[in-house]
Image (cartoon, rainbow, N blue to C red; front, top):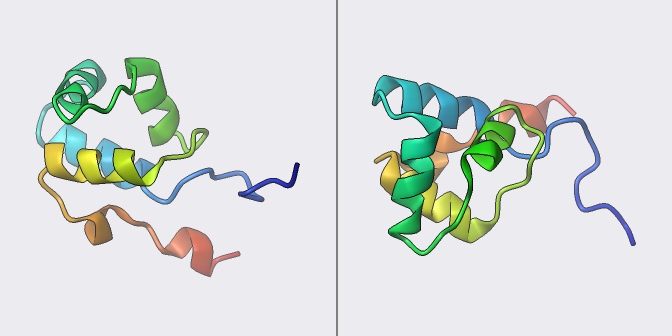
Length: 85
């Protein structure tokens, strides 16, 4: 099976999730708990892996993360990751 993502970083939002979560003083566990209210089940460990770019993010997860962190999807994206390939 072909790989969907070819590179070290598996998502475009990791840095901005960590930054925004820290600004809001929300722990990884609290973010995980809040995502459940949207029917999105991402454990604390997966939040950590999103933030360190080692886990991909689905569109549903992206939507819920943006809602919980009160930030637009566009603001979550770090397009420089793609632009620098």
